[in-house]
Length: 254
Image 1 (cartoon, rainbow, N blue to C red):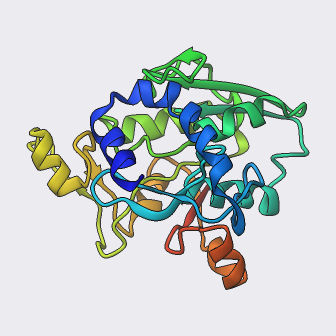
Image 2 (cartoon, rainbow, N blue to C red):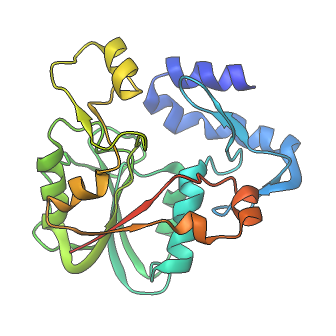
């Protein structure tokens, strides 16, 4: 299974993975039922999660039922425990929406929920994050996860996200990081996909963020709180949910 998933991730076009990968995985989920791990998003319980990753698949990562990964399970738990997301009337912009969240968020009666992306087949609105078509101060909440490492102009994209966020609103904009690096690595002269994969960890990444990621977000005007939420949880709970123990939540407010 590990080799099959790794092959699909690396060689099947992303849009087809997004549209169809849930079908065989949900069928396979029936064989995985157990009580060793639990998904915070769909509440499914399994013997283990599936491996996932482009270069070196991570063990115990992918929920076979809702397709959540470690970071998704952490974010969902964070929203439940530390925000008003599920109770308050909110207008939400979700950039590059994750499959595991879309139906659940669309069903929440308190949300005015918009999914948008420049190419994702899962999004309902076509949108260039560097030229967002919505007026200033349009949204209470913005989600934009694992996007900012792909955009050509990071500063333009974050300025646009800040512009359309309402005063008092908040955003979660997670990105891959190398926590061994003090500073973000960016080199526009690296254009070869193989070299980008070597330097930035993925062929379609244009930068690799370091420990200064919060400071990079703050340059757009956000007040960034670096929340080490995962380490506030009991260790046995974090292990059961298979959460990423180095992931910091960058809670960004306007």
